[in-house]
Length: 457
Ligand code: TRP
Image 1 (cartoon, rainbow, N blue to C red):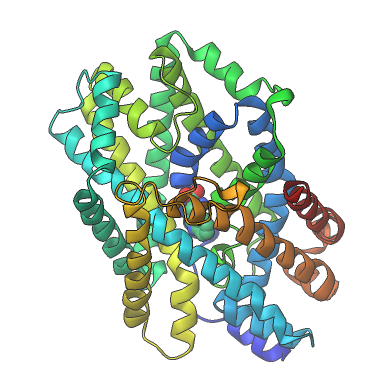
Image 2: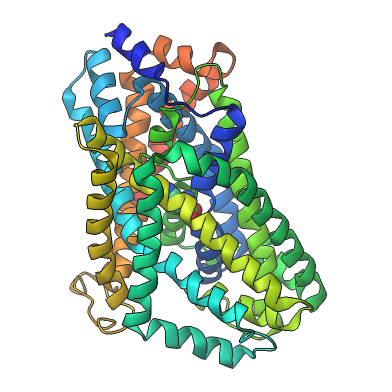
């Protein structure tokens, strides 16, 4: 068994360097989660206290779990499902642990279906920016523009289809070719552009207000549900508990330090989210927009900021193009768990990517309709918790707040209790293994359970 583990890990299909892996992992991690979702859920959950809990979740749960997933992926050397088959056999344990791989693959697949719809929103904004439509746009017009987009199933379908097509295209060819070269340039560009936006935000006169909104915690406004949302988002934004990091870890060279790499990826991801918050909230306050506006937050506020800054149309164009690329490098990683698994079972990558993309596209159509035609359709309204939640809300809720925490819990149990410590130490290195191991055994599973439990009450 040890032999096949080693052989699989030494397969030729590897990232070309540690830097390439970091960029691919950052490409997966940095996406709509940082720039679209983080600001709007922060707005909905009252700011500072939520941000602090989120940062805590990243530091003490997200980073150790990321190490566990990359470690499992590299050791198994296969798709998440294949990896869990290899590892449960190698550890002489029940095949039931393959459930982690299945749950992860399902979660990322479901996420892809709605992620594609949201990512599609960037494209009409690219068109508007290029046509100059955004220059000097007022907050009302910007709001109306966004409402108009959501109200049009035809437009949403067009852009959802284009985005899913782009995802399938790269996925079919194998993620290491095109992806590696693209992310190493685009991620740094996005970072610089965010810095420029933050620079502009300091001129709005409301920067201080935004800083205190984001970083001055008011725990009286923090609910148990907000803590669960923060935990779920920590997983979402780091692409955890969904196979992506496991799948990418399988292509990672044995010599690279998993501990250092995981820290780097998590820190970069967090910086992008913080920059997005600092770019967006000053504009929100300056224009009297609602922080709790919801999923439309950045699409309504940023055009107003761009519309007023010098060279705004150009920056708007650049921003939405980069956001599109950031979402693209994320969506590719969502499809990877499924495609690499089907590929292991003898289906070509092209067929697997097209088939997977097609099903995700179909599910995505139900998300897109729940933004307009089906906006009153709340199938689980008989449960108080799900009252008024549309299909889109439900997909988001189930994946981020249920499937991902569950998957992370099981991953922690497997890495901390099922796998022999010599095996995890062989991947993670002796130096940090002790601390990581203690966290994985006791802290992570218990913390995830507590958050879950308090939410059931
Ligand atoms: N982390 C990405 C973001 O923040 C989303 C993402 C990529 C993802 N791959 C994933 C989320 C896998 C869940 C599962 O936008």
